[in-house]
Image (cartoon, rainbow, N blue to C red; front, side, top):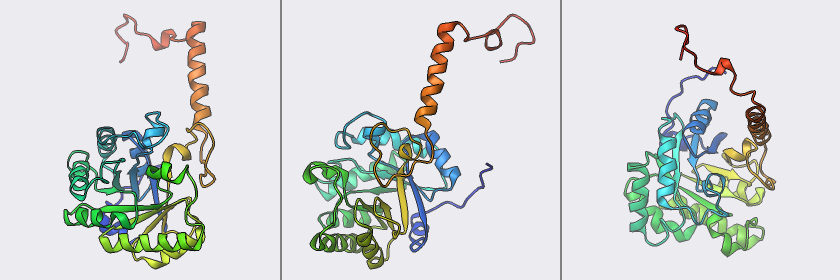
Length: 276
């Protein structure tokens, strides 16, 4: 497939996609950021889910600012046409709006991100306002927020009752008023996601929130079939790279042990016509 040069997606341009079909992928380093961009995604999210997919943690909670910055920098080197968004890790923004601005500023200044994402609803309004005042674009995230896994007692769908659904709608409106340019809706019933989408003028990005959002995001490792264990209901796998990688690695090990690799064609000799 030949990639076509695209116009850079800015925050302002992203907001204009409200009512469209926004495609976003969560990836964690240079190569996958390049490939996601060539595929035509509107935004690349360096998610704190890298704690599980890249670092082997059981949750997103142990992920540090330094770990996030390392991966954001790597993705930024891809110089994508897609908008580059960095997740703010647990306890990097919750203590105070001032600390949130300081850490988010590092994501832009040191990491090369063009926006940040924070979890939480109305309780994060002052933090969003502070970020917006500092000219740091911020994407909200409500519903099943992974950093609140212990509060929820696991990764459970949110907003199932009328009261809880109403609270999510108010959260989205509050985040919009505070200055968010978009909001992720995770793990909520599709009827609630539709109501939220119709209630705000900023784009909604769904993950496990049904088809009525303005866009969708999935973890790149899930799309590629690289993740161990149970696949969430909302994931659609487009490849089974885990099996392909395992087969390739197994064949390599077998070839080394049988003495089939390397062959002379993969070795250097003294002939003058050898080419590196």
